[in-house]
Length: 71
Picture (spheres, rainbow, N blue to C red):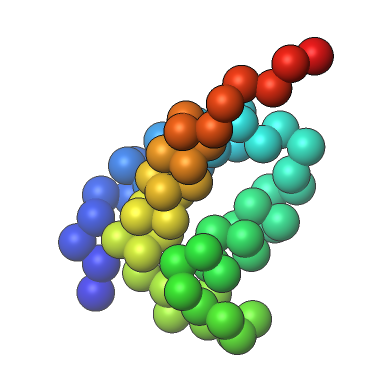
């Protein structure tokens, strides 16, 4: 059972959503499930909030480490 506050996950999803506005919400959830280490589509039912939160934070950290793109 998950010990993470669901609001923390939702706030992190909002941050990630702002970084990837072109992703559909389902696409975002599918990508996070995979990033959390779940390879099978059905794993979305079993992924814990802690796993999702860690995956979101890693995505955000990876993006902040990238050099800014020149437009």
